[in-house]
Length: 450
Image (cartoon, rainbow, N blue to C red; front, side, top):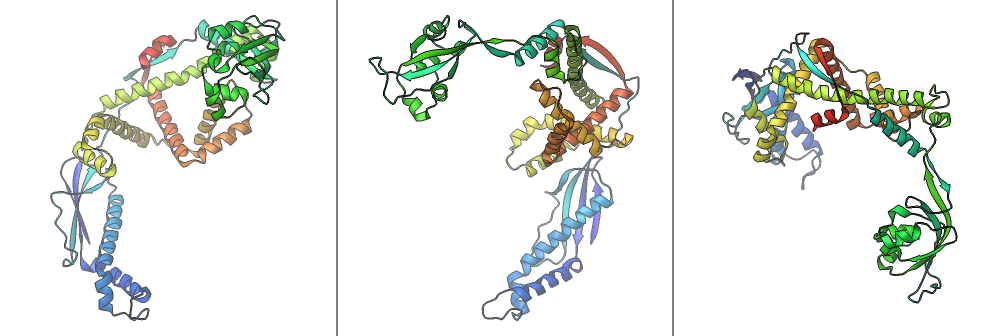
């Protein structure tokens, strides 16, 4: 077998693989011999069919399979042995590939186009200046977090009179057209209604100002304008809700008014655990400011990563085999059209350039991701999800359990490893260059990210 390479230019090459009969003859013969032993041919006992018959029946298929197997194995080995940094996968050369006659030919030549990754160098030093935006924590942001905490840990308390933002509990009784109770009708008890969810203003006004034991007669479908919601409220089937056309007597049994939690030491312990050092309102606001500042770092880092990518892609010159890459994208994505590839190609090239830059930085600085680093990142993801629901004091074993669930999924594991690797590349860039820090408000930052 003979493999040769012709470099067309810096990023395109042609590989020729010549396979002679001596390269595959024994493998083909061994496979046919095995077929002869096992094949069930009418009129012959197993293993007794004539060799010529086996050759005629299976020969070409075995030949094609064994030659392609040799081709694939040796092409892959050649790329590894030569340490060729290819992009995509080899594609058959559409101009030079000679036609193959599997019935007559004994020697075969296969010609492939390959795309080579360009050699690039990423110079990073203090002469490079990169913008870094820090988001200021405003009093308004702190106040919003205070309100959120007070609301999350608030509760409904009994009230004498219903207001527009009250909840009213009571018993329903279905009525007929004459206003009489329907025997065996729909009559759920202890149903809780939120007054502000009532759509019909007339019905809503009937509830505002009501007291315990008051009776209100209304059509729930008209009141809420949502048969699905009414079905759940009355504990009836979807079919019953779809056909419902009745008024109900609603007897008020309880009025509840939501009250926000008081910002005191008890609330702080609920938020941060029994051993928290947060004791006063001032401590609480300082803690909120610290937590907000820490959470906003992620936004600043994300913006810096995007800006770094764009800056380095623009700064690092590289030649890419664009025509080959378009062919390859269509070859490996059968559902893509030529028009789609053209429309999305700029985005693809941007991602590819950034990947090559990251690979270059990573190789030069020996950046690797350890399993421990990936696990730690997964735990931070888990904690962030809990914190979205106001849960800050999450036990370590619970975080480890959630992290393990993520890492057990191959797609999630790959995503986490890639993210940690990119973060390490960005951190190295940040360390080597000069940061031009600028403090901006949340609104200013959001506008920049639009």
